Image (cartoon, rainbow, N blue to C red; front, side, top):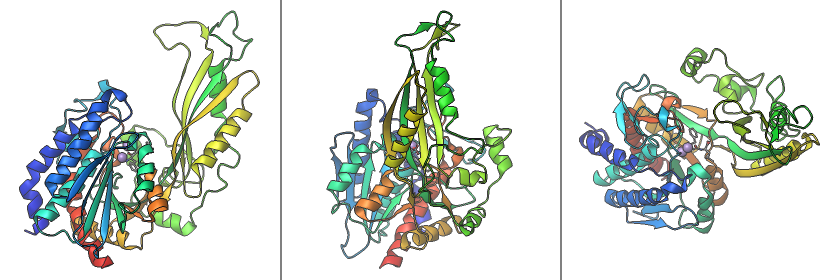
Length: 462
Ligand code: BES
Ligand code: MN
Ligand code: MN
């Protein structure tokens, strides 16, 4: 058997056990209650990198959670691959919907993963995918097949906006110099349809607060005579989209770079079943912007979605009350051409403008991020494509994703290096949801593909 496959086969059980151990630590970056666990995870990642054979590894202190940096430099004249990933995870709630503990990983079979999938928060996003890189590196070290230099930069704040990474990248441009950035934090179409992600959406995220009367009121005594902030907020939100499901904020689409008909025709070649899509989500019909198909709506078109909305009485039974305040969290996914700060500004102005005089409105921006597109004709993409072909026996299709990894655009801007989004998750893996999982098949095939990437990239670049 060929060296790569043989090494994985031999060390399979340990590779799995090590990942399960990593998944047992609840590294939830959003919740300060888990601070010690997040810090502990950084130390574990560092230790594993050292065991795998890096020359030096550090847990770099930042104003937030630390960044694990490590490198193996074999020859400065050879190309350098910079691996990025994140060791932090999303909160696990709603916890009651998990069929097993979010931090007690177990392997169970699913329809998409007949060989079994690891159920745990972070299994796919991103501990499982990040750890494939550590194991691929170990494999290359122990089989004397590392063909170039490697640097690792694994952060702990991706799920909360990568705030500290921004400063780290700007302050360490030399240290982070590389020829390509390799990231596994996205997905592929299906286990028998390999694909490479060629784009990410950007993000503008705001919180809005609508205030009516200065205190909660009896809805009988005052109802009908004062503005109810919940009624007003829902009307305002409803007005943000028209009958064509287009966003009504003036100027919102002005800078959108439209795809050519040819590019759209290319996109339509990627396999997609609307029936399977609806069935998987238990939907009787789909929804979205007129003039675009589902695969376009969730990748090349910008969106506006309410992520949460609250206010008033939410306890048991009925309480007759007009709340003083109502709130919503709203995200806008952005596409190339759109600038998150400019969009946040357009949103804020518009939201204040459409508010009736009977209420006060406050808009608070949260983190944002730039969209990203990558070429399909450079060495990074070519190497990824060849590596996937070796592993899966099929040429991967390029696919633009609807998700966001805001730091990728910053890498391009600050380091002037393109990122290859070589992800192995499936949409059905339930990232950010209860029962997140990652296919055992995907984990091992990922390790295999990553190991192959280095060889192809070095051959193409040398
Ligand atoms: N890994 C995801 C992003 C992703 C997943 C992209 C699947 C493409 C396919 C990442 O961890 C994530 O969740 N990003 C956030 C943005 C961030 C600013 C919190 C997102 O997309 O909501
Ligand atoms: Mn992620
Ligand atoms: Mn995520």
